[in-house]
Length: 494
Image (tube, rainbow, N blue to C red; front, side, top):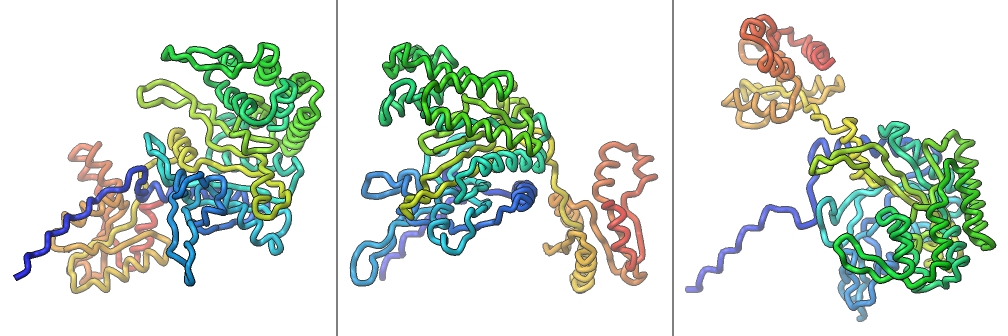
């Protein structure tokens, strides 16, 4: 007789590392926020686009590492061999919403209007090491204009971002959009005599540390090096103090207003044609924003903004929330950035071989939602449905009819579908669902064609705050005619 096969262990009921589940209020509040943002995008003439969650690794392009299995940074797999021999395609979950847009713009270039204005919202996946607040799946919310090289497109994106933040619930004065330009930095590198390649990349990485180490720290890192907070020595780029001068002038050129900042930038780029062009673009953006009613209290020129400048080719922008919150240790800190973007004129060219200008912005959905909750604008307890209790399982059709009437009146409602024997468990269920009202009809009430309507919110309040006499004087349960059920529930909810 064959031995019994070894019993398979039960699978663990846990989410994979770096992933999480979203319940009730999380899903509802995120949808509400994204609906508000989509309303602004739609108002500006942008069209929704939903792309496949899976792209070819070839289309993702810039995420393909030089290894046999191209899965560094993305979740990738290879399809089975194709008929007739040969390896199958490498596929991957999308890393962001911009790479799929570049593919769509190239694939449907003869069908789409030019410029093509689209917005997209959805999950993206990154095969990175998870950590606190860092997940492998998260939502993005993008808006892009493909096919326009005019800085009017960049200005429009910035103005639309301001409107979207406000419509989502961020008050004016609680955010600031900061704008810079890669061309200005190119002019600075030119003035320094630093060629493209590693020297320029080292300078860019150093500039990106300005908000952490300040002017003196950047000066040291550009030249001989510095010690960090731990005492470890960080080797410098090796520039002379004279070469480092234009970078410092660039980073410290922010003035009291846009006019002063632009004047300082013109001095910083010197005779560089690329730098002068970048400054002029910033001046045009500032003028157009002012014309659209976006003042310097909402968007400013700020040379300290550096957003992966190797990726961007022109204006870059970042939305920062300026209000303070308390961290895990009770210390005050500013909330920080919730959105960023800029001009990227090279992505579509990978597919077509032709220059196709593009600019766009991406909002960090989870960060913006956390900000709204921190301001008390979201995060309250979500109200559940009215629960129609079941006193007699043979009369289930009557209870379903009550729920159907409430739904037809626009009221969220459900019938209790558990074991109806213990009525107390039905009310416990209603509490767990955060139900505002419970509807009760036993045989006696059915014979008299009435229902009991229990105000669960008032009942909980009375039980928590009122004396026994007050509790008796303010009954949270009333009896009404069956025909008046909808009206009574509506009165309570109102």
